[in-house]
Image 1: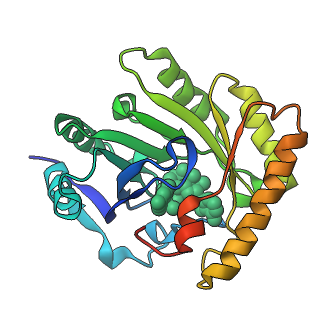
Image 2: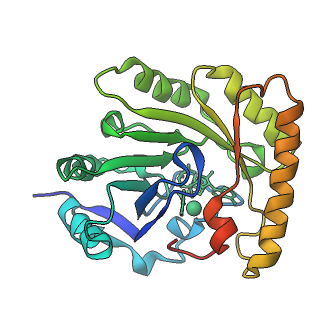
Length: 244
Ligand SMILES: C[S@@+](CC[C@H](N)C(=O)[O-])C[C@H]1O[C@@H](n2cnc3c(N)ncnc32)[C@H](O)[C@@H]1O
Ligand SMILES: Nc1nc2[nH]cc(C(=O)O)c2c(=O)[nH]1
Ligand code: SF4
Ligand SMILES: [Mg+2]
């Protein structure tokens, strides 16, 4: 019997709005459930119970059918996000099926949990959480996850670290992460303070001011000599809208 995966959203085609494959045309599969409770989570409906009626238990085949209905033959890339997809062992079946269909796979995770299927993912974005999130980093778990990815040479994959930065304490945390994993491409991402704001123009102005500040901080820092600084492109385009 095929195992099921708790799914909250399947959407696309759209573009990846964040991090190392920003701009990549992709579909999204968003799983339910997270082991974190970030204060500013823009996808809190995946774990706060507010969308629990919308969770569907789907097999990998079910998910593929939904992706085909939405995306036809107009995509070659699927991003799995959440919540934390690394809570779900059965996602290994989806990763295999997508590869059989000739589709590349990306995953977004905070790096707190491991599943063996992560080794099969093409684009791995690890986003440890800074102090403003209210979460504590399990450094041993993060060391292990990054170590296992780096030790495995069985396939080509892209791995990056992405830290959301709201303030000076977050910036100090970001530097600590970059120092600890110097070989991993490092991305700073603007934080969206107003995840419920429906006024897209006002939100854009705030996000651009935050981006301007973050670029300035990176520009002045020796420790951040080799980093990427990015906004959430989808938030600049479409605000806090779900499913884009
Ligand atoms: C919703 S999370 C889901 C995946 C995983 N739980 C994680 O945090 O990496 C996807 C990405 O959105 C980022 N994110 C969440 N809320 C945000 C906010 N208010 N501003 C900027 N980025 C945010 C997270 O840091 C993460 O990189
Ligand atoms: N377009 C778009 N890009 C994204 N990158 C990461 C997202 C996420 O919520 O994980 C996301 C999302 O929700 N939409
Ligand atoms: S780890 Fe990701 S999904 Fe979980 S609460 Fe934090 S930002 Fe939200
Ligand atoms: Mg998002």
